[in-house]
Image (cartoon, rainbow, N blue to C red; front, side, top):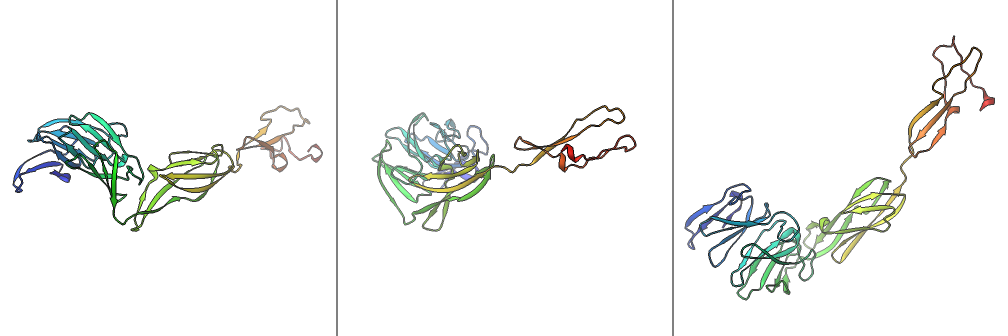
Length: 314
């Protein structure tokens, strides 16, 4: 059996007498982080899934390390939290529920990838965190799901056969936030929650597709919206066959002062000569305004030069 938090496998006879153990904490061959699922083939080989290291290790009956496969990811032969495992010794296959990838992966006994089936949602052949698996003498595969609260039955190639569940059902989804206001360049993240009849809920943001009604006003990547230009857009969150919407208004950022410029900066006069100045305000939208009429001018030494306003010049 997998002794999860002790990071080891313990071996007992059918009467519960202790026979041996192997494993330690770590990431090397024969080491574990969370040894979660365990299965044995007819030749006595032991297969152990490690949910946190996202891999499978194979041992002989005495715990001698033989091989391993898998790492974290979404590709063929990769895993995101493999919690369980079952072996079909008759046909030489291993089946592993890949929980967060919402699929079942099928391997040969040497760990070589064969096939997969499943996707996210609650329909026939779809999953929401499949975390348990078993196989019968006819080769039928049974999969339990933590969040859909059901069991599904498949043939050995993954063709859907049947399903049954308890009384807990999905009651709807909720997108948050429903409304929002952004200025150009601003960002907003969304969350999609699925609610169940027993009062619980599940964050399904990672399994949701987000789109916007007008990509010239805002763009969205994963669940994050970026404002591009003024206007109003509708964000649609699609999870399986259901969807929810939010309305976001994008406005132009307020115009602010970025600086002022006095011109000219230098000059030379003879006694009795005059020189006019201009003060220009630079704005954040790239424009500028003449603010000379609203500016107070002064000189450092009035014995050398004086400054005054000549209305007729403005």
